[in-house]
Image (cartoon, rainbow, N blue to C red):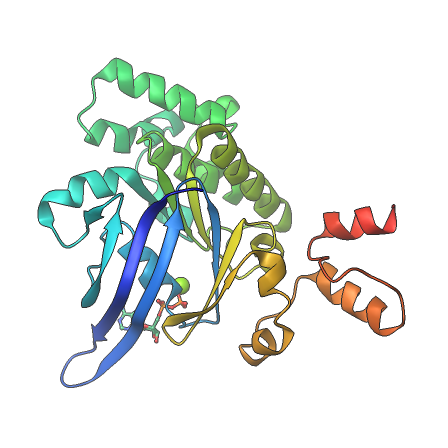
Length: 278
Ligand SMILES: Nc1ncnc2c1ncn2[C@@H]1O[C@H](COP(=O)(O)OP(=O)(O)O)[C@@H](O)[C@H]1O
Ligand SMILES: [Mg+2]
């Protein structure tokens, strides 16, 4: 049984829009994220995904309720440094995350800011470069890389800080399909080889289908959670939220309606291939 790494209890967050107007972005969220788990967070626009993600490394603090990271309360100022070191954030637009004119310097930036000795920084940069497959590019200019490579660079910079958990807010949004596939396999590799906990916010149901666990948000709270195959069995609720099934699941449903005996647990292309080739 994996232990909880992040515990969210009755988390409520309200944006104050000036004057009396406010927007309740999260209302009474309860959620546990286990160590080493690959969690996909999905939901319509405005459902509170980004607001929730920003609570995981104390970029936002609860209006009510609490967020504990490895037992540390994000509201305690003395925990901030440790929490930020343990939980790294990667955002949608890789261009906004570039801080240097050389790939290896860019990756070193966060680790240097931890005040580590130079040889330790170098070792971590080498490790992050290897893990993200950026060896060929270490002396390149970041802004000239492709979108997919820039996003891997952003991940490498966070990895050099050796976080326990990576939170990625729609990191594939600016990438083409092959860039997104590469990103998914990089994340899986990090989870398996380094035991990194991955929290992926995504619009792509194909990506969510490959996670260990899925949480579906709607109007500021989780409305469905479980293994992807369980979550995708709630066709009606997902449809009501305007969320599509993964393509493989849609095809499986159609085949089944035409009388083929297709198992209900097909949600990825790989599932479909192994069913068709059985
Ligand atoms: N900086 C902000 N100021 C005011 N309201 C915001 C801000 N960011 C998000 N919101 C509002 O909070 C709600 C949740 O938004 P968000 O967390 O960005 O959802 P998602 O990431 O799922 O699209 C939405 O109603 C959104 O309009
Ligand atoms: Mg968002």
